[in-house]
Amino acid sequence: MRLVASALGALVLAASLAGSAAAQTPGKQPTHAKKAAPHYQAQGPSAAQPRNGYQEQLADKMRYGSSAWWEQMRREGRLGGETP
Image 1: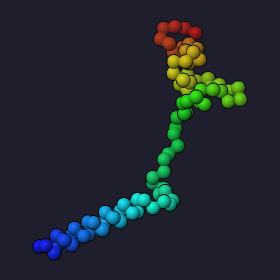
Image 2 (image 1 turned 60 degrees about the vertical axis):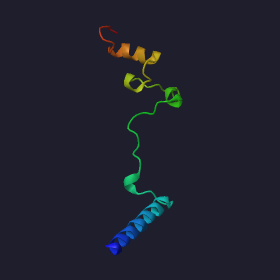
Image 3 (image 1 turned 90 degrees about the horizontal axis):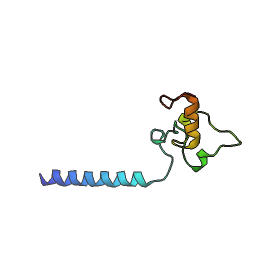
Image 4 (image 1 turned 45 degrees about the vertical axis):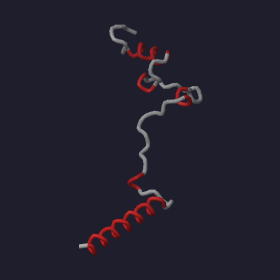
């Protein structure tokens, strides 16, 4: 019984050391672990400023609550009872 327990303990110890060593080796990231590109437009200081004079004309793509967003919502007629 002691032999089985010590063999099992040695096996678990070897497996844990091998697993941690494999996790620390730098190299190519597996294809299943790659991050997908975001399907939304990034929001931040650079996203709020138009590029080359272009400004998005969809309220859903604008920064929520900004004055441009309110104006676009008014133009789209999405403010609840108000008409454009």
